[in-house]
Length: 228
Image (cartoon, rainbow, N blue to C red; front, side):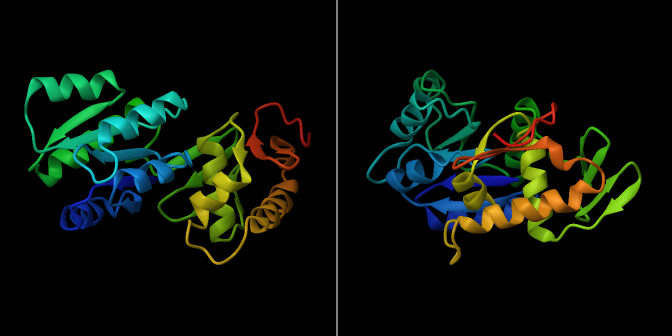
């Protein structure tokens, strides 16, 4: 799972990274404008958002996201404990609130609850699509009890598609999610891996469930409609 931390205190941001590293792959932003740019890619499972940020405060970042119909769950961080701050945060679309300083265990519990509410997974090691099973912990896939050989990025792509079933994922979203913003390669690598993933699933007839939207991206669909 992927976590975005928007926090200008670099020590605190790194501390959150260390706390969550066994659960999340993290990206960091240290001001509001950078955080908004990353969050707008809509590839994150959860966002931790500080209120007091350089260039653009957390309230404005969250307002801008919600106006774009980006519904990623957001935990707001603040050094304040006033009820007015909490009310303002919830009014602009926050899902939860955490007052600094906070305990490591409290952060993890809140993240777990938030992911569970949004329909994601945290402690479960296995996700499924029809008879296809992916074990997230050991990166192994099987279909009807028969193992499927997938390399690391193919597995990650299939996992991302399953977790966003019946939702179109653009090539840019997939690239940013799996290869990362700072990757030296280009988005054409997504097409290569999608093609290879289809080949790996074709033996089982499951290639039909990966729907291609030409020039746009891909979607895992229950109906097996193939290309568009």
